[in-house]
Length: 58
Picture 1 (cartoon, rainbow, N blue to C red):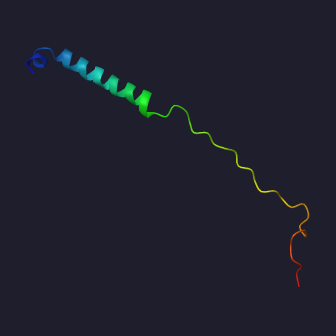
Picture 2 (picture 1 turned 90 degrees about the vertical axis):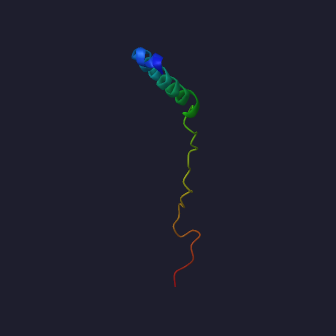
Picture 3 (picture 1 turned 180 degrees about the vertical axis):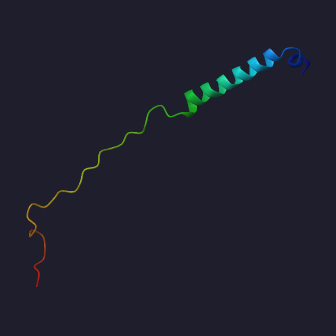
C-alpha cells in the first residue's frame, strides 16, 4: 500500500491495465463469434381454386 501512496501513477496504470484485460476477456470469450443462423420460413401453399377442398354451403 505504501508503494501506491508514493507512486499514484503506478496505481492508476495498474487500474487501466486491469480494465483493458477485463474488456479483452469479454470481447474474446463472452461475446458470440457470429450471429446464429436463421433458417428461412416458407409460407404454406395458396390454393388456386377457392372452391377446391371446401364443403358446399347449404
